[in-house]
Every structure is written in structure tokens, then in C-alpha cells.
Length: 448
Image (tube, rainbow, N blue to C red; front, side):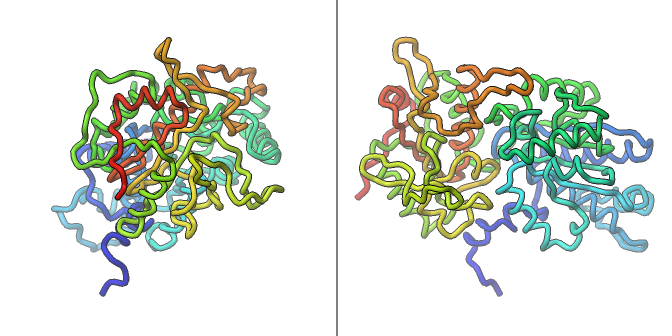
């Protein structure tokens, strides 16, 4: 009957991003409230913005996919179909609601390229969602038609007016802004595009996950959250669905990366949270777990250039070396987590944000350091290899200060440290930071 084992099914994209899941209590409340506000807006021909806020692992993407599937099913409801009154949201399956949802143009914006392709793959296998477009913010801005609903995953990664990864994208940015607002307004960002092109917008948002100067500034996103809250349209998620360590682990890691020392070391039950003194031993541990669990991956901060980039001029066989062990960055950018070579490679924040792993091996590079005299974290710019992650945004006159860069780097590590569902293993390059974190992260037992 089954071609794959249960762990293989649970590790698959179709399972992780499936809309056929039981929602947690707070997820169900959020979906119900958003559907009610959407239907009110459609009936009154009004517009608005709703926000789902939650920490890593609270299922923001699950809510987005579930919501899109629910609305698609309502629109496809046929006269005479009988909805099970015991089913959640069955009250919306009637002719009047169906007519209100009929022919609505819906899109799902996923800023992260890698995650976007994974979700497109899932949607292509669900006939009821064939009309939902999975797009970039650029594609929404360039669309000749408007949308009735756009849901944005990882909305904290939408861009402001800034230098883009490619020169052609900067031109697209200018062209879209000029087309939508009549002139090149440098204060307009990709969220402004989406709001201009859609009657209703739903954002999946975590204000602690911005990792580059090109991301919309936190203050601007907070203003949007404030506007939504005034209308009662901010919906928090609290239940932890990813890490077996629960909300306590998420808060613990975020405090460490924010430079706040916990009062004491905490343990998290069956969740494995340990530190390795040897990078090779960490790699061996991840590789040993992969055959049994799958989705065991190495990750690191962007502290080393991508010399092995297959599209680059230099074809190095590895990118950095630690304790005599060679490491190579991801060989692909699209859905790297599920690519064949991923178990032997190292992924960065740009390949992992939004993904779940079973076990994560996190290398904290030499760009993040600790000053024992001042008892604070600091960033060594010379060892931070993400050029677009530390440049000034000259197009808007914004300077990326050392404090700003520390914010982006520690946010990125907080994301990497919260990918693992079963456990997280840590290796720290800076000796002072290693000694500091050893107070709060137990050392791994030697491998047999």
C-alpha cells in the first residue's frame, strides 16, 4: 500500500506543507477569524490587512496553506454537497459563501526562492489549489491583473528599496514602483506593491527573523502591525510545533543570541542540545543520524566565501576548513534541504529559513565574537562574507551600523538554532564565545 516508510513520508515536502492537517487551537482561532474578516471585506467591497505573528515552529506556513486550501474548497462547493457539521469551518460551506468566493484571484507570495519552489511542487499535486498562484513579490507587482487575496509567507523577508541581488532586479524594482505609484517613491517597498495590487493581504510575520539590510526595516513593519492591531486583525500563534524542546527552548536560544545570559543552564527533556569542541565530530554526528532520521543537515553563518559556487569562476572543492575537516557550502540554492548532496554539505540562512530539520548541526563562525570584559556579543565585519548582508543602503541613505549588523547576524543564528525538531548541535569558532556559551550549552559526549 505504501511505497515509503513513515519517517520518509513525514520528511517529505507534501507532508510538511500539506493542508490536510489538524490545526492547533490558536491556529484554528486565527484561521476562523481571518476567514470571517475576509468574508466581511468581500461583502462590503472593503480591503484590509491581517497578520499572523509567531515564533519559529508555531506553524505560520501551515496556517497559510490551510487557509488557501479552505478558501479554494469553499469556492468549489457545489449545490447539494453536504458538509459534515462536525468538521471545522463547515458553517462556511453554503451557496451564499461560495458565491462570495467565486472567481476570487488568490496568490501566495514566498520571498525565499528555495522555499517557494518546494511549495509550488506541493500545490501542483493538489487539484483544488491549481488556481492559487505561488509568486514572488516582483511577479505580483508586475501582474496586469489585481488580486482579491495575497498571503505572504516569511513577510519579514520582503524588500525595501535597496540594491538587489542582480542589477536587473533593481531596475524591476524601480519600474514597478513607478508604474504603481506614478513616480519612483523611494519609501515604497514590496509590501506597498502587494497592498496596491490586492484587496486583502495576510502576512505571516516574525519580526525577529530579518537578516539583511535590504529587508523592510523593523520600524516600518511594526507600524503595519500597529494598524492591523487597531482593527483587531493581529492573530498570535503560541503553540510550538517544531522543536521538541518547546517554547522554553526557543526563548532560551533567542536570549543567548540576543546577548542575554540566562540565570542558569536549562535542559529540554529529550531534545538534544549540545556543544562540540571539534567540528569534524559534529559533522560525523550529523552524518551518523542521517540514515535513521533523514533531514539531518549542517548549517553555518555566512562567515566564509562561496568559492565552490557552481556558477562562479573559482571551482574550489571545499569552502572552509575547521579542525582539519573540510566543509563545502550548498551546491544548489533551490530546495537545497532535499537535494541529493545536502547531507554532506553546509547550508546557510538563505537555504534554510522556513524549513524544518530533524537534527541541525550549527557552526557559529568567526564573525560572531564575545567580549569577556564588556560581557557582550560583537560582529567582526572582516569575517562576514555576505556582502549584501553588511552594505549600506545608499538608495535610501541608510547606514548599516555595527549594531545593525549584529542584529542581522544574531537573528540568522537564532533561525538556524531553531530548525531542528529533535536536536541541535553547536560548534563555535571564536574561543571567547565558546567559553561563554559553554556555561549554557552542555558538551556532547565523545562519540564511540
